Image 1 (cartoon, rainbow, N blue to C red):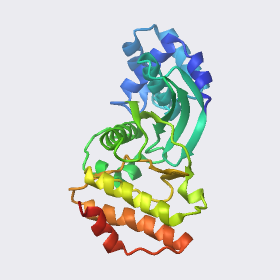
Image 2: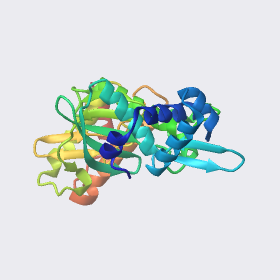
Image 3: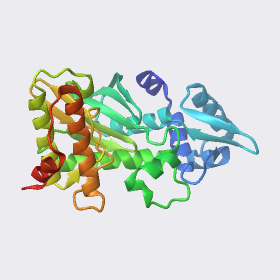
Length: 288
């Protein structure tokens, strides 16, 4: 992984333009020909080729050489385009260190009007075809050049939309801004529930279920809830990671709600020997 702050500071204006040109070309090409980047940027061929080599050396794009020479963004390069958009909008003024790395995201500290976190979605990092099959919101989408770029962008937009609908009624991160595959949000304190040894586990179970109920009342079901995306602190909990949400009235709503609640109940029974009946808990969540 690159040092985002250092590489961003090193980028020249023409290199940023070339990154945007590669991004644009990836809408229609798996590997973007040099000619397309040249046409987009309106820079000379020698300049484009030299700067493309520089960006390869910075490890933010990659090169393909076979029947022709082509380029495509790496996730870190896509990150830098989102960062540039946030800087231009004055959403952020400084970047910090990586504060979280997950299977499908990287989170950086940032500073704007106050400390923020930037979550960069990484859906499709290993196989966007597998991600498309396993995400309900992607299954019915028919796009000829469907790619990780599109999957990550859609996930970020969905998560931002969910946070806007839920915050502040539900304990979720405060949404601040989003661009491409990135979401700027408030910093979430506490520790992952899976890593905590709770002194009053019954209280934390109740708090988690209360937030699930509040989200349901607002029409959303997390649909990927577990002890790994609930953050706990002394005074409460925060539920994170919302891109896979489903609508409470959707065709898979009951199945997803049962899975979410079942995951939480199973965790508390397994670790703390607290047993709750699944059917009764779901009935309570659905009751206004």
